Image 1 (spheres, rainbow, N blue to C red):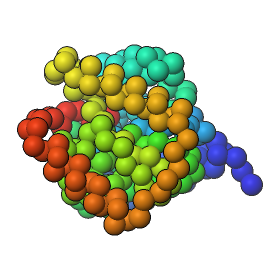
Image 2 (image 1 turned 180 degrees about the vertical axis):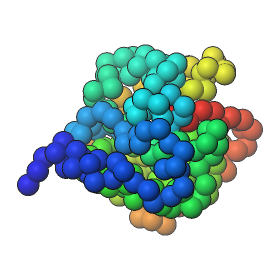
Image 3 (image 1 turned 90 degrees about the vertical axis):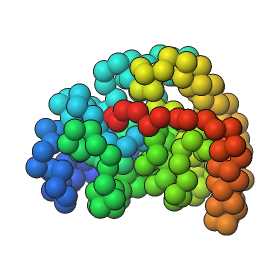
Length: 221
């Protein structure tokens, strides 16, 4: 059986010329994702941004530099994680992904997750959080909360691009990354039922909503 790296490479070659939705006509590059095929941590954003579309590499530019700094703070680099998006092609003008685009592209992400089999998935933004957790709750009430689904830990966190607009978010992100480090070092394998997961999501969203925290959805990969 092929190892993870070869399986991921074969999958990339299979889908890199995808024309399943209209975004293929406006993209410059198909952005598959990048990092280690053996990563324990996977970051999932929403869609490539302008720089990512031009370079074909996820998470570049100033937000990428912030990510590098945050990873360094927990003694990791990009080579230790894998970064992907819900969509593999940039929506024009960095608009939000549309439902039909997500439904068309999501199986690519799910296949990446299946191959890599990370211990932790960190979702960045509303669309990736809702897709991975199968919920309609916004990220405001879920950020920083630990969920478990399909044998994996799901941790919604702020997008590093938020720091570009609000520097105070850096401390929140540092806290989130410290939590990632703690989770990687732990050995907690308890798996809730689907009903328990939904109940946890509902309760966390309700409790956090009382705080009135206004997390702006900023930036895409």
